[in-house]
Length: 237
Image (cartoon, rainbow, N blue to C red; front, side, top):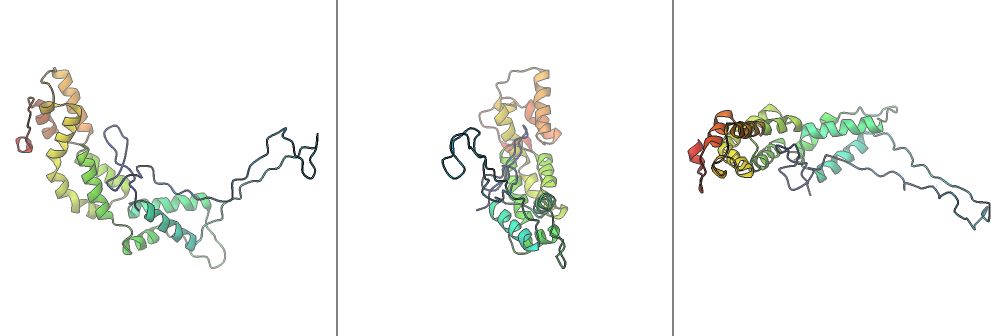
């Protein structure tokens, strides 16, 4: 099952439009060896070479991971896309990082490391879908009250290309007011406030809405709105 890699809100704590988690930062934990251990100093050993005063210390070092080759890199990519909803750009970055950490098998006739081509092959097979990722990430962020600018920043971070970003732009624009009102509800601003507050407070609220990625004109209109039991989106279009 795919997990989410998190969606960032205005406090910079992330998360994902996909089913929870990655949140979580994208990770791949590979186990090499059994970890070994070192016998505690001063413990008794009654086997061979043991006895009083004959304590022996043993230690086993974890073997260094083998350098990656084309087959291992592909298996790593498959494990990653099984666990996480991701993009071609993010998968490419992950594979490049693993090559830097593990090294590349440069033996005679070894294939060159091409993480970008492998990420594209995962997309061609349907394991990676940048547009679907963008659609779901945008919807999740806007439900949490984040505006179009914050969504655009998340797209850049995830490596969403311009074409896929433009394809979901109309849906993001359609949810702009709803998203801004969701933020206002969370922060008790404008129609969700108590009507109290001075100019300084309103300026602070406006600044918060701008940091959350909302348009200035929309944010100002919401901040200035009087308390209401039933604020309507159409009032702020």
